[in-house]
Length: 154
Ligand code: SF4
Image (cartoon, rainbow, N blue to C red; front, side):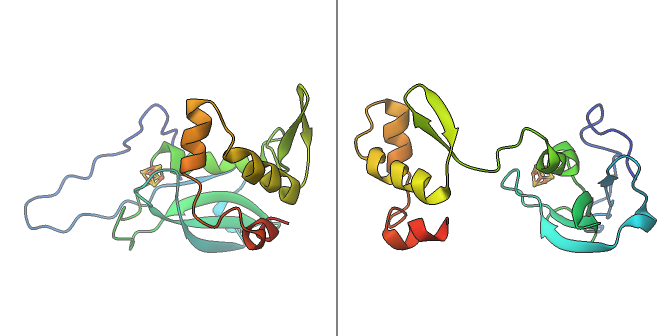
């Protein structure tokens, strides 16, 4: 599967004439050292890194995500994936990926839990003074600062 698509973001062209069906082209990428035979299962999903929502299957081995492939039958992409869809999932395994919320304590950001972080967000959003913070506050969905929604994050 797949030569680097950073240098060739669109991938091989697949022209077709008027009235002809759009040909499928299944793009895929597996982590270094992982072969297709080592994939234990493919989980149907979609890339959400832009509003296109290309259909893809997630490759799983050893309880971890090890790759993706486009779905030929998906009406949106007929198997095609762009560079973000092909490679973006690798960030899930990044050593410096945030896995807990950070809250400000004085001049420091410290790890916290979701209930604390969401509570701070909700209590501080209305008092925000910068344009960006006010815009963020305005985009908070109705009810997202209720006790019920805060509990969801615990
Ligand atoms: S693969 Fe590319 S075009 Fe498709 S949803 Fe992801 S980011 Fe968008």
